[in-house]
Image: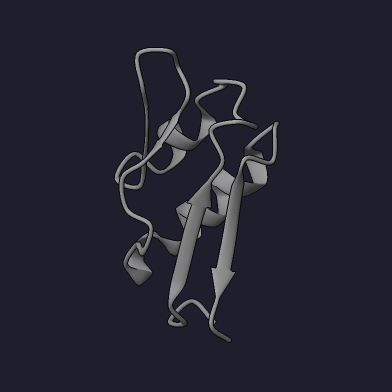
Length: 70
């Protein structure tokens, strides 16, 4: 399953600026000056999938959504 393509979306309207995503998966997420999520890579490589899933699970606002083809 980790080899399936993973697409990520981040809804800044839901983001509360906790920053867990940027801490857990810094190659995929960052924060803007206001502290809101910035999606750096909507199609992260398989090596980052575990961190991206963890970031989505840890997001207190459910602002991160994961989409898989499988």
